[in-house]
Length: 253
Picture (tube, rainbow, N blue to C red):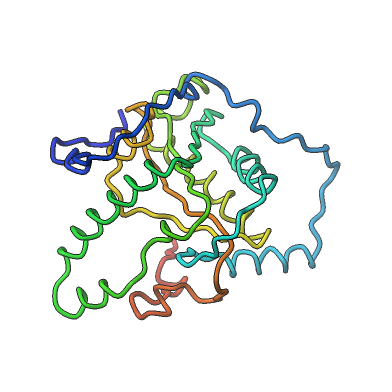
């Protein structure tokens, strides 16, 4: 079974005085019909050169945003993010994605504390100049982003009847990653930025958000209008890691 590999040490993040109210969630037992998008059927679709060019631009201008304006994001845009996410492919058509809008200030504060502790531990893994560089990086937009969205994979879902999972159970998580990419591109196409926060202790996030323990955290997303636009990734711009050539990741057999 695909697990979170929980250890007792992981629960140290929960030592907080914040009183977080319980939230009843049953989405792992339901098919999320309300998020399915109704699309008029298209016969013999044809995507012309102009569309292809715009699509290339969309891919090129997708950024992991860490600096946000505090302006609210229209609810129709947020609905479209979920609708398009649910159009992603999934192993066995299992649709294992589960979405949690994080609105309560106490929960956001607890997530922020989780990030600070995890980020401190990550910094301690580096030394010398690399540690100094890491300490200068802005690695989340938790304080500024008006919208927070946690995305989980329901690894025990019965939807799809287990098709395709026996030999590669991790494809459940991969399916959710595909849905997140749909969210990212949909947001970018509407001028909205998205930042993926991965420096978190995942099982603590499950507790903070009061979701089932067998939901696997895939991403904690900060969403909002970006303060600035850049064609180059932030980590490249700040000399952490440059892009590598496609030749370095492609082989022939």
